[in-house]
Length: 219
Image 1 (cartoon, helix red, strand yellow):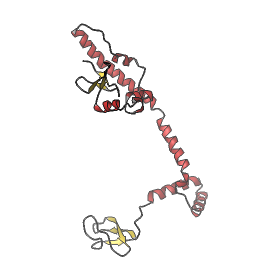
Image 2 (cartoon, one colour):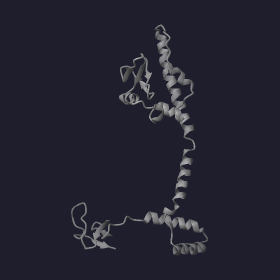
Image 3 (cartoon, helix red, strand yellow):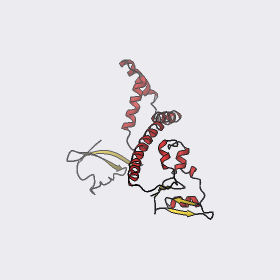
Image 4 (cartoon, one colour):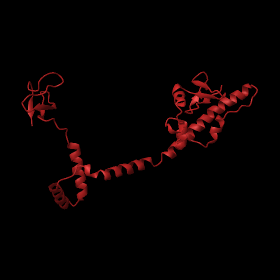
């Protein structure tokens, strides 16, 4: 059984599967699916499509030089059938696939080394470029934190970072124009947030009852 690679994407094209195109000059092209066949007829370059093996090899995302890849080369040498040779060949195929998968994992680990550091550097560059969009403290707040830091003997920048973090975590979503939000204590002891319009109307909860029917409100 011969498994030919797809002419366009490089995936294995199994026997009785896929599409075979015969050109007028007698050359045959094997495709694993209609997607590759359509892209071939549209004369697209497989090196410019990210889902093909040619693009991945050209971008350095696939192993190009490896001894296990030599076993997949076509050999048009007729060999007499031998049962022992077939068994050895099957065992060798399993062993080669194991070695290739292990080498691919090592190749991927080396290729992805330092990715976290590059992401952190890119994030820091983005924050530094858009620093004017970050929330800032008022002058009075900075003076208050400076006095507090002088009393406690700690760093002012650390207190400012803590204050900004508290502002980000405690920031709530604003209500629409003409609406106010307040907390309501239910009879069972629970607390829920309700939205009330300026005219005094209260929005209904999911259960269909008005908020004014039961419970007491707190500011």
